Image (tube, rainbow, N blue to C red; front, top):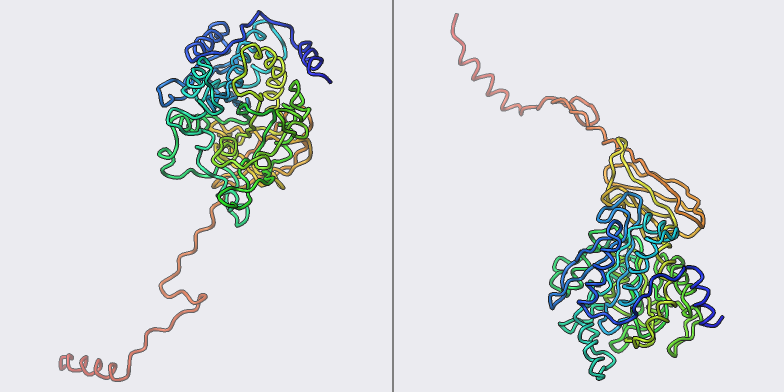
Length: 462
């Protein structure tokens, strides 16, 4: 199917909304756009900052929810992150367009969008690297752009090589035994990362995100974890090799959803590269250490993929409308993927919510945990699974669950507090040695004779 026919079919899925100006947005324009959307949809949006860049620019997030600022139990949280590399700008512009689109369609009573907003808490971070963007944009204005100008943050650091390396630990644990999820951070991790990276880490630790996509440029492919190859280094470089996660089949499905909903990604041939189905395992393409998508999977409950969306890292303004039409349906469908698998509440016998309960699926060596409100979300493909919930000081509970292709299956757990072991019985003064009575201590014969003579010498005559 040609690109034009594919785009035409996507136009049929949504009626055209008010005219949108397709242009690049500097930082001030970006902020104005986010607040414009909030002012037009004040009851279902919220603008908040997760921190500041090196240069002090806010990292603003636009939230869509029927109760902005509130986590509703059993309602999943999903996020989009754009412009991590300052010179890869299409994701930034697509997320601004998506924000305007969601607001417009919600106001126009589009039932698909209403259902999405009312059943999902959506967080959109258009630019993780606003400082780098301004450098790249200035170079574009001077027509002196180099391929990497503006890629890094203001300290010259590549933010997608700046997260704590947890892959080394998970590869060791997979071989020798150890935790398979929520791997701990080094004690001094804040001293090892940039302000933008620290802000994002604190953000994803503060929300129980279930699904995420990180938008990049320079290729056209949906990239899924692991990004870091398990193979050993050769001459200073880690060899390229397919390095799947325990959820590899699920990740492939998530990547294909975006690829096949995209105007042309699924065709495979793009930017001089060929990727079957328009998807790739990250480490199979090239090995990347300290990346954000692996960090999400290993430190939180969040399943993240990386979307490479354009051959040109900084596409011309005239190309933005075509790119939007090619990505719009895919951006919506990917958000909808958070509604699959199983979800539920974990409570004790008195119906108190249990946070940090571990949800394990037999045969998949990657667990998730319940959030602060006791609710959990486990993305799964259709099939029958054995699922166990465990928590400290509680007896585990195991159930068999059949997951269908539609909405997630509701599976609640009510854990019973473990019965403490009986206290050992106190022994009598002469008890012990399996209940035998011990004989009295025997004194030596000389000592007994001396004691008798002392007693006789103390007697008074009659």
